[in-house]
Length: 268
Length: 345
Ligand SMILES: Nc1ncnc2c1ncn2[C@@H]1O[C@H](COP(=O)(O)OP(=O)(O)O)[C@@H](O)[C@H]1O
Ligand SMILES: [Mg+2]
Image (cartoon, rainbow over all chains, first blue to last red; front, side, top):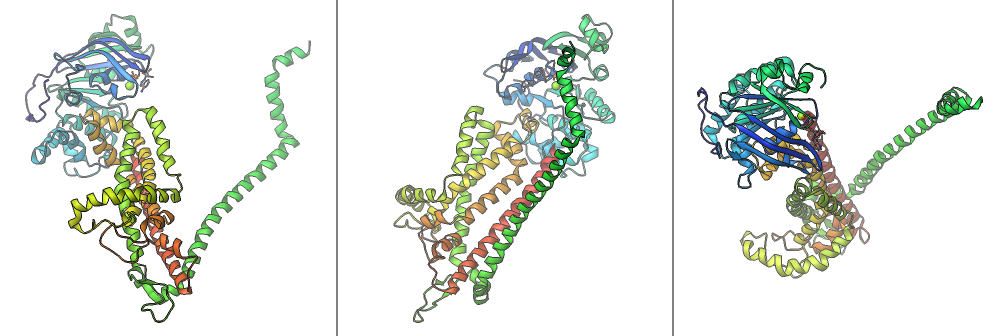
């Protein structure tokens, strides 16, 4: 499958390279018997930012955690349907779940740097797993930190504990940690919900640069954020996809009444 | 007719009545009783805590006082001199001379063997119970492992004599000797299977549940988002455990190890049963030996001289200091661990 050869070096100023697109088909997700994602079809077009919005508890996290197969790590959780990375079904029994997660990175709601590890070691954790060492590792860490807009703030204190960073820096560190694996898709689950407006803005600016290299899905409860960063927006309600389209249209001329009610703040 | 509305509001009127009660004399009495109860509670709990502290002080005082004659006679050299001769007949060389060298050595070596076996095994059990087994299986095995901690040590010692000794003697010791005999610590197998090695294995059985239970709880407490953070990078389960779980619980694991050490250092009876009461330091782990705790248990009742009693107290003092250091070490490290965890949340 694409992107599994993890050591392909990416020149920092590379022009946009085509990332894969993601196609979710007939996805259903369960916790025990409770069905929380009820048959979703959704495309994440290559090199675009797709925002996923919807009221709390509607299944946004559950759905994107199916895209990198993290959902199945929860005891009693399972899913049905297909998720295609370009044309490869990541749920195919022949596909290695490890390779899936290296190709599809994730940034979580709360910054989760590894405690008791330095800034450097946090970013190096992923590449180290795939055997990158020494100078190549150092370069990879630097590239990732630069891409996450954090290099200038931390280059002289790479050996300090990651927990010494501010919340916004920690979240960009987590973005760098995900980028260091050189994924082709990045999933972000409300990455700014624990951050202040300035830190939020920095991450939103990042997305614009990143999408030249990766395909991005971002879950957000913040409609302004979706409007600012997303090319396309998908609206979920109660485990179902109600509507997806160009962000502009979703916010100005939604086709579905429920979408309109949600984006105009009538509920949520 | 008049009763009906009152019935409808029975609930509210009842609580109102209660509220009014509290303002009256009955409530006042209760409040006084409560206040007295609180005072009594405070007093009793404080007293109990003080009693515990006083007890430690008394024990230390008694042990120090008891060992004074031996301390003034043998000084610090007691720690490494290896003669232990309670004989009083003046014809015998070194009669009534005591040194704890053999015992200190035996205590340290048996404890080291116990930890070498129990720490990796205990961590493996902790990993399995907290992250790999299905919830239902863990619910069965977990309590069983903890049950192991409640088997009286004298019974484990018996098992060491009856089962472990013949097995070590016939199988393990010859195998280790033929593979690693050149290292001298795996010398010729003894005649019985009793000895330092056996005692170390027996101690490891007592240390194991401590390590397993503590590390399991440590691993369960690693936040889920950290474990998922590692998995999302493409870590395998083992890589996730190694890079995130073991790494972020290092100090907790060390603290658990020290607690296990404290348990191993102080055990007396099971060691007495299995160590074979040796009187010299031998290179081979299969040789007989003895430990501080075991020697005290063996000889205190039958001691023949004041100096021997005092020397046993001196042994107790050494043991006490070792245990206190281990406990303080564990607490210091656990405190550091708690702060680290606090920073994560
Ligand atoms: N680990 C879990 N076990 C059981 N139910 C869960 C779990 N996580 C989420 N759910 C349920 O699944 C539904 C969707 O949750 P989630 O995907 O987290 O929603 P969102 O991210 O849109 O707020 C909710 O009803 C939630 O209660
Ligand atoms: Mg969510």
